[in-house]
Length: 63
Ligand code: SF4
Image 1 (cartoon, rainbow, N blue to C red):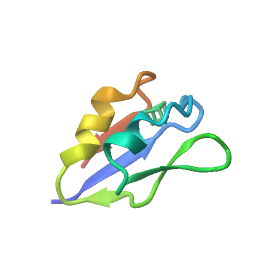
Image 2 (cartoon, helix red, strand yellow):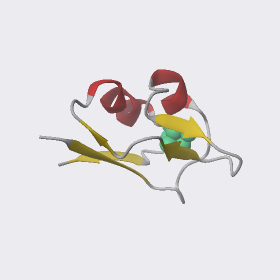
Image 3 (tube, rainbow, N blue to C red):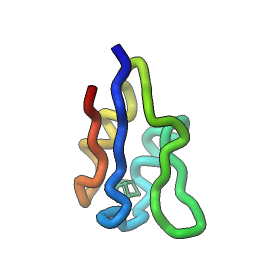
């Protein structure tokens, strides 16, 4: 079953931690916010680490 990732854009402070941890899923764009390269993943993997590392708790993984 695939997992769905969401970023709360209003809460993202653009620190770049998620991009550093999981560049295949997250990228910083010109608006200074993290954006998803893909919204569904087969395994939480580094995206789960990004959830835990986000200082503003903006990332969520659900099913
Ligand atoms: S770790 Fe959180 S606050 Fe930092 S860029 Fe990623 S989503 Fe934004």
